[in-house]
Length: 425
Image 1: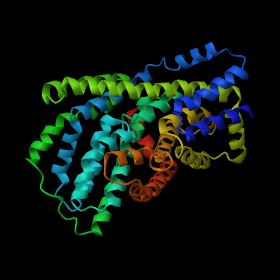
Image 2: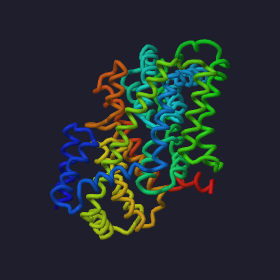
Image 3: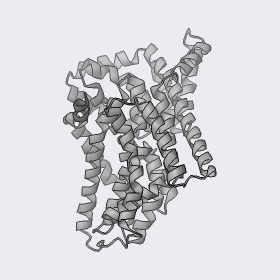
Image 4: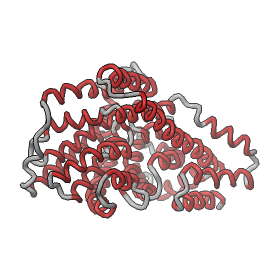
């Protein structure tokens, strides 16, 4: 009963737009003060101990990678290369939209960052070329989902920290689903433009196509550092993040010379602000998870689910429904930290592969980025473009249905996630 009250208070605070870290911390602190024999000092020590994690260090480093790429204009180079390659075909800017998101995803790890950066570039160009507003809104929103799926994925790191599953394995398991998702988005552009023959020409590609591609090649080497280093056993994910930061600094300062001191300081400030927010959520989630564990919520939930089914597939489908509802009211990073300690032990009792479980959990929660009332991507795109929120919601709804279907496919065909980690072993 106490656990239910703590959970309901936390949920009410989240719905009231209280920052998630405080929404989790306030009822948890109340539990410690009034119902627990543990002192508040010991609880604070538990929170700080949750941050003493080498894998967790990858989070601020990968956030810095995205901030540096944005500040140095590397996203512009990725967009120019994609436009040079496919910009002249029918519906070319639609393909550019998707491919630019794929290219930027290797440095972003966040859908909000992807849509904030590329939405400023792709949206006005597509609208000026006569692309329907709903199509632009839906595609730009949907393509940003590739960023938190493709390594480096911040939610995947959070799952690894919360569960103890190898973050490197999670990165490898996310590659094929992210690429398949990219192909689905490309197919959606193809089918749409077939019905709209007027979108034959997306305009002249500025400058030399070869120059645009060659200029972007050094940027394209960043994923080789991340994934190649992990696959080759050269780096841990945290070390890969630090190496990528150093590589981008060399590119921005010495090769492109596109990162003045003012922008570098801005990137560091943005990284600090975002990292502090995420790490505070991590610490608060540790306290909240401890409350649920003391009240034996995971055990009670495990008994309930195991009394209903012993099928791993049925469990994952049930979990998907629950996570879709959670994702509607909670940002994915927070939701991963809260749900993993509760659901992961149940999955292990049912012999679900831990990496497969992690990919399904992360992807399902990411769908919440496109669903009201939270729908972070919807609000970010509205803030960086002339698109209205109602247009964005109507445009993205068909893609939400596609994403749910893709989540079911991930559940039914585990090898989509497990094939690449299996090869790497």
